[in-house]
Length: 415
Ligand SMILES: [Zn+2]
Ligand SMILES: [Zn+2]
Image (cartoon, rainbow, N blue to C red; front, side, top):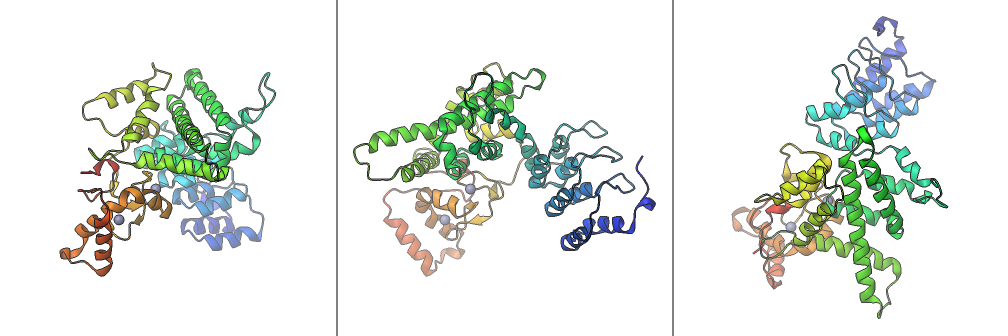
């Protein structure tokens, strides 16, 4: 049974008070002053760590973990773990932090619910996705050691950390996956090895008996498809460039990923849809070798229906679960990231994560930017800057029109 608050020392009570009022600096000073064990609990059986998770305060949680707080210790009256509280707080980064410190994903509370289930229950979809996409480091460790008769490991040790980050990404929009690959050039340099590991992980997820995880198997398969697509582009480019090889190797490789990103973003003139992206994603689904799996059948059925949703939404929903109706006005038009807070400063009609996403999308957006800006400007009266933007846009031969001032990819209509 949980002890009463009467048992707590003044110092312990003070720690709880500082956590509940988010006094980061004061708490830091308190903890630095002496070595305090973090295993005490309040009248509900809640530890300082659980309180900090409940508040969703990542900074304090990190401090308590550094202080030696046990991430899985649970004396709570309803058996909520630190991860349950973090999931309820809605802070996905906090969930990730706890899991990378060994928080058990399968721990259930007194009504038999896991942290991911509780997060889903209150609509914290980012937490659900982060927990479901988490991969314990031990799963990677298997590949950095030679197994059985192997002379060398499948995954070189120096790639382990980048690879781990790469496969845990929650946003599986193909452009985001490509951007992430650009950030991990060593993975692309070892593409063949990465693909072998992903294939093996896909197989392992499907052959775990009761623990079979179709979702993760498909995710590994899908990431493998993106890597394969980059390799395909690389080979095509190298073939083109064999005669004129003045460019350095390094330059060529980053160019190839960018080339692929442009292809994925390019919308057709007839219906305004990203044709190449749609075809690539549909092909990835079709190539999933486990055709008897529920995930495969569901995706195929959805994509074959009349008036199907975009392939990117089908793939994303398969991996991250069906989401409730989310506020699409804040989705990055380049990479599909939610809560993209930056707007195109000229037209203020499209959202981006950052400058890089805006830069990548500019070749598609520049023609429409002025028009969009015009429709959002007051009374059609243009400032000098807007006039200049408009006249530049008029110089562009091809006429691309965006009729809806929204930022979802499928709403972009081209004439
Ligand atoms: Zn973005
Ligand atoms: Zn714009």
